[in-house]
Amino acid sequence: MQNSPLVSIITPCHNSRSFIHRLLDSILEQTYPNIEMYAMDNASKDDTADIIKSYIPRFAQRGYSLKYILEEDLGPSGAVQNALGLIKGDYLVMPDSDDWYAEKDSIEKYVNIFESLSDDYAIVRAQLQHVRESDMEKLDLIYANFPEDDPGTLFEDCLFGKNNYCYAPINYMVKVSKLREMTGMSIYNAYNTGQQRQICLPLYYKYKAWTISEPLACYLVRESSISHGDYSKYPTQKVLYYKSINYIESILKTIDSMPDLDKTKYRNAFMRQSAMRILMLSLRCNKTEDVCGYIKDYRRFGGGYDVFFTILKFKTKLFLKNLFV
Figure (cartoon, rainbow, N blue to C red):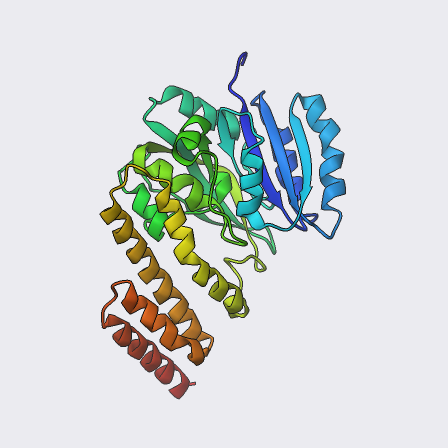
């Protein structure tokens, strides 16, 4: 594949010694010839650095570039933001350090689809295989029944998590020229906010996406992750909730072509959803001291009295459950 477009890979990593080898090995096995990778180490305390550095000559031998960059613990979005100023590629992928590519030609297939599409497309994604960390058992397959061509729902799917939307960054390749146009290569970052909405929402609003009907990547379902843990993560989720207003306003601000009324509509709907989610989590965690604040937020962003019926329904269900224990 002479003159192949350059694919840039950004991977935030933090204490990744137990799993990053899978990702690096899967990249070394790729059939695609033109790859650069930036491993952004968020102040790991284990030997993540040694593992990554041991792969640098192997990448060079393969004809790839691998750069290791140590930085303070900024979280994934901060790591991606720093790397966006370094990449030189035509296309960008952002796998987390615990995920990996399922096929040797995964990246080649992403690029081939992109190269066959019109300039109206800014994102190519694929089906995604969930894999359980404890025994590496395959679980559900994401986007198994999703149409290939953009159905026109993806902006709201991504914003609100509709249609089983998956936020695993490894599953998405974006066209860098479109990302530069829509974001100036600058995204909102705050610790643990991730990077998926910041990257994809501006692109979904103006451009189209294609979904490959084949699982090209694997997502490790870890009990210790921020999205798959137990209720002990309530304090972290509470902090993220109070960042959410700046988070969503910053993303919507990048979309110059969106009318201000629509930005307000989407902001309020997102905040109502966020307030209801943290409210229900606070009830499950018996954090009653926080409930009134979340109710006020829900109402402040346009929510109705349905919040009280939701709480009553939850309390009734909990009462009945305890009654028959």
